[in-house]
Image (cartoon, rainbow, N blue to C red):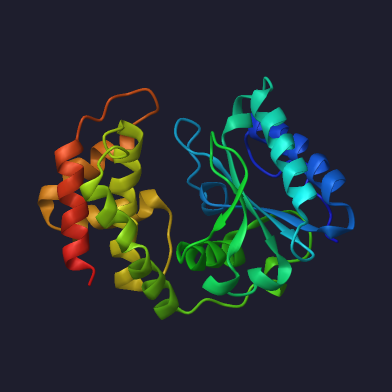
Length: 257
């Protein structure tokens, strides 16, 4: 097992939550614990304390029995109820080593917690092809073997196919706009559309800000202002761009097939 990095991120309050998470997970999992890794914005270098969450993956030695899943759920509730600022911003999955190596929709039901939510066993969709790529190429190991030994390389065309595989979700947002009506989700949607375009064009994954800057130059100029507002948006502010965001989603769907 690798050596635990003392200060895995430049953010002391984020590290404080990770210092709570690590021993709690290890205690519950015991010899089923393989490793704990960061991905998402903390791995890609675009973490923003005003809008980001803490994306993590715990690799396990096989599927977890129900009592362990319940113990993990209770642990996450305790962390979220504590005083740590980032306790409610943890978003992660507990994935068996065999299932982490490559994405298989037939072996993709794993414990998962969304920021502000509860740990549940749920299906991981094809976006986990992209998450695996980010983990393999950029992931931060807090404990465990090198990710390159756990995850097979992801081909550019596999990334493109994975992006197309999640377009159905954005089609749903056009018919049920309850999520997109919130400013935070508008910003997320706009930047995700930029990332979709970038991956389809280049067969690669980059941070949302990098994809957004590229999109401002590469896409129709009518989207440049909307993308800029999403880039500078901060938690607590009103973006108030519902119709433009829905139009941008439609534009992305039309040009992604």
